[in-house]
Length: 308
Image (cartoon, rainbow, N blue to C red; front, top):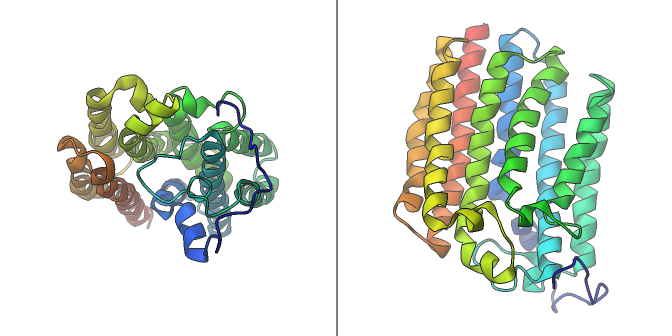
């Protein structure tokens, strides 16, 4: 199937259906650090500038988490009805496995994107109304990653979107809603978080090169090929965050505390360096999220200490 059409939208799911645990796995908790990390970092940058607002930070977290769960379900639905997930290694896919009807997964995607949009409306109302347009752009980007007739995720642009929305927009947006402005160190920190987020996404796409190629899904990993994708992974997972951390020391030397996360990033890249394939890359996916979260928490801790 090359168009986003479900020939049997009302076909019941496999007998027994999806359990709560299946729905949780379908939400892909390993990607949730992509939601938490930018809010932690953006809030810490606001704190260093003397503008931390706890309830806005919580609202930003609701927005980010809802969007990432929504995009995961949206990808599950769109890839499932296209047949991209028919022969896939990796986390459970609800539609591809037949555990849930496509229409049900689509409703779940819209439900979580709607929840994020509602939280974003409240946050925008108390910060800057024009941020509603940014939230709308996030929702459209979430859906058209694999949805629509010409999904950009099938054209090698997935990592670009991840860098922009779960890096630059999420970190600087979090700071702006609390502080009312964006500092240079928030932008540099956003580059680091976006790089980590791209590494998580790239790990998935590296693992799926064979199945994506067969299904006609041209991800960045498919475009680059196996070897160059592994090299890019090392750049995103280790070297960009390392350089960004050193640069952030000009804001406060306490930012160097985040260097303690680099060994975690090095370990996350180990299966990629070892040329693991298929299920052998699953530990790299788990560790990539942990490295991003570790860097974000350590960086935030350093900025909080500096702000005291």
